[in-house]
Length: 249
Image (cartoon, rainbow, N blue to C red; front, top):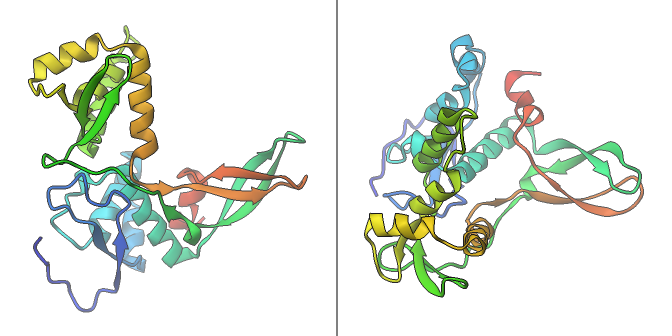
């Protein structure tokens, strides 16, 4: 992994990537990220970026200092970690979440500390091909798989958009085809595609749940106390409230 020289006048920190680098050719597990400055407001207030929803991508291009990690390849969980770092260091770690008290069915606001977010445990062991093993119970078959890359996620989103309500988009089977790299030792793409098409629905559901449960990333849940005194779990979202400080609101 090449070590890029950085302008010594740029203040930055090293951020651990939740993905552990498993998606990247460089296997990079951390990245150097510069702090937000006044000049970044030029991007955050640019109508051309705001109108095309590319403002966050442009911001990441500006703030990520390591050039062996293409921005369009950075997976969602790593983007989240970098954005949390930028928000924490620029505007503080407190974040207001609106949720509902299940006892009273009334909404309430609670402040959580983004700095307390932790990485999920990741215990899967990759083989020499960089793949992970899974056993399909109904099919009684061993498969190997890789997690979807950001480019693959983008491709799937484009399939969703292109279908535009006309017919049924093959999202689930396309995800399976992209993830599964071998079936019973067979690695031919056509045979894998045929296997996926005939896979029992229980195997499909169990496998996709396994992937979701074991995917490396940030644990975005926090325990909070409701007005009625119960403890519940809330999820940290990346909606309007999260980005509000970036725009000076």
